[in-house]
Length: 279
Ligand code: DGL
Image (tube, rainbow, N blue to C red; front, side, top):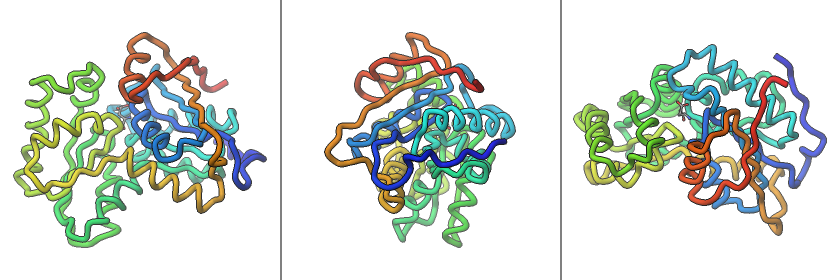
């Protein structure tokens, strides 16, 4: 795997875009949170819609896809990369950081820090794709930072297709959520980590199904906050007086993805371009 040098523009405050990638358009929940927090940042987003979902693929395949995604972003000269996909963060982040010199952030670290920001957090539930749960990345990151935690990971593979069908309020979604949540609620969780790009859209339903007092940690918001701290630390923030732009690339374009992009972003995604990877 090649080691990409930092683009020359990555020095000091600059308007070079931030690069985001996800298996599809779900990572736009992270983009939305970043746009709210840092409206001056220019953003280049790659959704690998031709090859999603990543959540059911093997670790090796996810690492290969993530590598190709990062290379695409680097050829567009981004100043930092955000792995806006929990499954790719879980399986590929350490290797990507080894191979590329540009700052690369995932969604796990920030979520874990936020979950543990509450000193009373003891029983932590995690819902995510099968790939993320099986990687144990969240479980390890939590256990490393605090001993004595009781951690329960629950794979919830049906939630991504339900959200993509926009069945957010559908009784079938409530029922399936109940099945996934029951073992976690039985174990008395005090915190639930939404460890998948799509799940922030389920927050209103989740709130009605969980016992009062269970704290929800969503990786989109926490990742945006973490990114802001990192960009400040690295002196890479965009000039505050500019209005950030969003350039959206997908490896497969269809009407459904355009609609979904609007749903995740909660506004028009603008022009979407087709990305060809590995060029
Ligand atoms: N983006 C993925 C994640 O956050 C969910 C969709 C998929 O499985 O590709 O884990």
